[in-house]
Amino acid sequence: MRTADLVKKLQIRDALSPNEVTLLENLISDEVAFGRHDTIIKEGEHQTSSRLLLQGWVARTKILNDGRRQISQIHIAGDFVDLHSFTLKCLDHSIVALTDCRLGVVPHDALRKVTEDQPHLTRMLWLNTMIDAATHREWLTATGRLSAQSHIAHLICELYVRLQSVGLARDHRFDMLLTQEEIGDACGLTAVHVNRVMQELRARELIETKQRSVRIIDWDSLQKIGEFDPIYLNLWSEPR
Amino acid sequence: MRTADLVKKLQIRDALSPNEVTLLENLISDEVAFGRHDTIIKEGEHQTSSRLLLQGWVARTKILNDGRRQISQIHIAGDFVDLHSFTLKCLDHSIVALTDCRLGVVPHDALRKVTEDQPHLTRMLWLNTMIDAATHREWLTATGRLSAQSHIAHLICELYVRLQSVGLARDHRFDMLLTQEEIGDACGLTAVHVNRVMQELRARELIETKQRSVRIIDWDSLQKIGEFDPIYLNLWSEPR
DNA sequence: CGTCTAATTGAGTTTGGTCAAATGGAGTGG
DNA sequence: CCACTCCATTTGACCAAACTCAATTAGACG
Image (tube, rainbow over all chains, first blue to last red; front, side):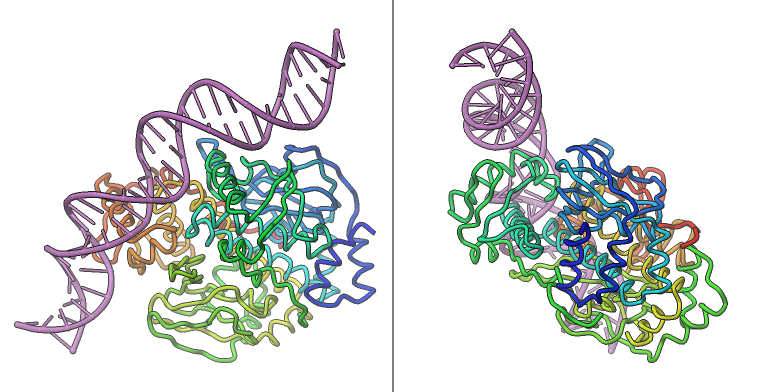
C-alpha cells in the first residue's frame, strides 16, 4: 500500500478508521518519479494537486538574490511535501529532490471532497501541516539562537527521531542523505563550516560517520548539546 | 463586531458568505485582556480553546536553556494567535503580550463543529494557519541567509504590509510596538546590534523614526535591501 | 526631581565566512 | 586493471559581521 508510511505517521497522532485508511489510499491518482537535484515544484507555480513522498528525500528551498539557498524543510517517506498548496494554491518556495524519489499525486479536488465529507480526516491532514509549521518554528529558533555545533546536533537528532518513528532507522543509525553543502543550506551555514563542526562532533565522540551513514554514539549528550526536545514533532496519540 | 479584522483578513484571500461571517462572530465565547509582558499561553500546556487577537500586539516565543529567546511570529489584530492549538492540542512555544491586548476565546468544540458543517470555512481557517507557516519559512530564510541589515529591513516591510492590509497603517507609516530587544529576538540578533543597524537604516535615509513611530522614506530601496516579496502573505483572492 | 526602561556608545572578542587549493572515493571507459 | 572524471570532503590562511560587557544618555512618567 503506497500510503503505508503516511498512515503510520498519522496513526502515531490519532487512530484512523479502516474507512479513512482506504480513503487515503484512494487519494493518489498518479505516481511520479524524479531524479536527484530535479525540481519537483517551482516557486510561484499554481498548483491543482499535492504530492505525497513515497520514497527518497526531498527539500523545500528558497533562493535568494545572490543565489544563496535556504532549506526550510526536509521530507522523508510518508510526508506530504506540499499539502499546504491545497489552501495556498501557489507556493512561496520550490521543492527539490535530494535523492532519486517517487511521489504520489493527490488532486486538490479529492482533498476538497475530504473536507466536505470527512471532518476527522480533514483535521488529521490539517494536523499534518501544523507539525510542518512546528518544525519551521523549531528550525527558526535553532537558526536564530543556537551555535553551529548545537544546530547540527539538533538536525541530526530530528532526522533520527523522524526516520525512526516511521521505521526507517533504528539503533541510533541512519543514512544521512544530505551533503555537507545541504546541511549548510538547512542550518544557514557554509559547507566549509559544516565540515569543521562535523569533525568536532566526531572528535567529541558524539557521532561516527562512515560515508553517508551516521551512528549516534552518545544520544543523551547529542540531544543535550542540540537542545533537542521532540515535543514539536507531536509524537503522541490524542483525539483530534 | 469583534471579528471585523479577522473577516477583513480572510476576505482578502476569498469571499465569505454572510452566514460564514455570522458563524465566525459566534465562535467567540469569551473575551480576555492581558497586560504588556504577560504570558498568555505557556509552552506545553494542554489547550481546549484558541484565541483571536482583537487588539494589541502579541508574539510567539521560544526560550533556550541559557535564557535567550527567539520570537517566531508577531501577531496583530485579526490574527489567531494559536489556531494551531486546535489540532496540536499542546503548543511547542509560549505566547506573550507585547502590548496590552484583548483576545477573543474560541473553544475547540466550536471549531470542531465548523470542521463538521462548514467545509469552506474550515479551509479558510486552515489557510490562515498556512499563511502563518509561510511566514515562518520566510523568517527562517531571512534568519539563515540575510545580513542583519537586510533582515531588519525585511521585518519592517512585512509589518507595514500586514498592518496596512487590515487598515492599521498607511502612507508608509506605522507604530513600531517592538523594542530593539524584541526586534533582536525576532531576527536572532542582539539588541546592541539591532541598534547599530537601525542607525544605519536611518543614516541611509531608508526609514525615519520618532519615538515608536516608523516612517518608511524609501519603500522601493527598503524592499530591495530586505529582499521583501509579499507573495508569502498570500494577499490575493482565489477560490479556496 | 527621581525612577525606570530603552536606546546608545565604545573597546575588544569570537564565531563563522571567504577564497583557493588539495585530497579522497565512487563510478566509467579503455 | 588502470587512468580519468566528477563530486564531496577537507585543509589553510585570512577576514568580517555580529557578539560581549560595561557604561552612558535620553525619554516618559509619577
